[in-house]
Length: 162
Image (cartoon, rainbow, N blue to C red; front, side, top):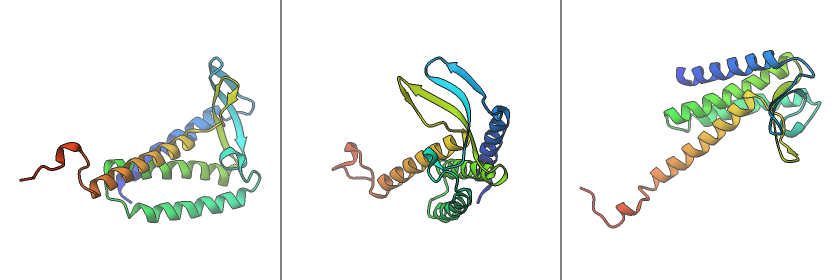
């Protein structure tokens, strides 16, 4: 793993754990944008959408397995700024939530949105990093596939290259 990925991991871990410590008082609630955006501290003993709630050991083992899997997948991708960011963000987020599970027994979530009468699941900086990293990896994969098949633009069709 190169130092660029490690820097992303460190930044995500630092932001994630710092924000969780600042907000980390139970029953903390602050309405940032009325009827839309809230800081609302919750403890989540499950995974996304509270799946496997209360099964911390299983979630820790699944997280470790996921880290190993992503680590091996990482080496099938070319080194690039996009891939470094994608894998660094994903690892940083995964390790941030893993640290919570190992040392506290649950994940601390605090970012909450409401749109009309719909409340979205509360999340944290680590969750954002994982999602953004996964999105960047999807973009990288699509970009790589397009490059593999040659230039798909209309300009290149029928024209000879020198």
